[in-house]
Image (cartoon, rainbow over all chains, first blue to last red; front, side):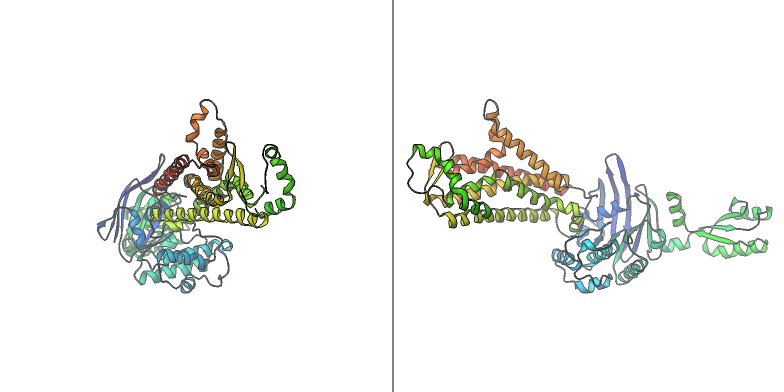
Length: 290
Length: 250
């Protein structure tokens, strides 16, 4: 659906994005992951037409676009730290955006959809961060966009708001909306995204689908109460594992192999007290953030 | 304006008596020189500082306010062209200036006409100028038109600074600084300084006074109109280039 090729950006002497390429398939939820300063927001801002890249091509349905502003026609955007006219109410702000878009959306329904009720007379300057975030989601949905691009949408949301948003995104995706979400919260993204792009220092460190992720090898760490003996060392080496400490061994295993290894360890009279698994995405993310 | 009118109505006789004393020594004046038209003319002196200051405060906010609130990101992620957004803001600025000038005209002209009546006007521009009552309103209308153009040219410069620095206060201070420096330079009318004058926009803004010369020097005024139009177009074009190429990264 969307293909981005050779995207690069620099501010002064600092390289923000280094010739990255990725594609987004229709009706997918793409998680754009990375620590703060990785370049996620810059990608979103380029897609939104707010920042002009040094180089890069955009293809929509395999057709090359003159620039990145073409995406605005079919996308709804939520840019990090959303801002609204503080002296207007939520509805007045939405009405302004509605007029710009010549949209026929029902604002009352939209406000209910994002959980912003009972704010009729309240001006935006009195809104909490979470409320502003909900309003920003409402404005992004105003045109019933084919593609929704959200930058750090979970910022400022309380646990209820967070779950409401995930449910809303899942619901929108079911009805055919393609979603790109950037976040530094890996666990949250893993709950609903079906494809992941891990950004690190302006490069793509990993680009993987949820299916691939589920089928790929995991780093499995077994911790024992007693110190490991030669039997365990031999077994670990036979499975290409690694002795991490005198009470922990680590294997790279496919998901279907984990139960077999646990059984083998139990047979060797070494029942692990803790089994910790990290998929390749979690492993890479830890690697670049620690 | 209303307060000035009321003040002049109650205690103005003494003030104008003092101001007109020197004329009365040389001329026999039949009737009252202090009338609504003279007061409306005197109100035009706000064109030097007061009106430009009020206008640039609003203009700077029209353009950089969006950056300060962060709402520029909200607007530019909608399917509208940057040039369309800037055009709508420029139109808003021009409408504001025209309305502002009309309000100033209304409050400068009508209350003073009602309180002091109308009549011929004597003003000092390159000597004493006698303006006939019948021609005053026409002259006043063209002054306001010319002043509106001056303010649009000056605001265009403020608009460019507002877009460049994305900060209302910076844009206001720079514009005010330029206004003050240019006004000062304009007062140096000797030696090489006099050759600078045609390049100072304040020199051209001041040409509104020529509408109160008996024989209006049309060509001189037209030259200033061309200069101010050129200045407005220059800064508007510069603003389009700046805004279209600008990265909204904050």
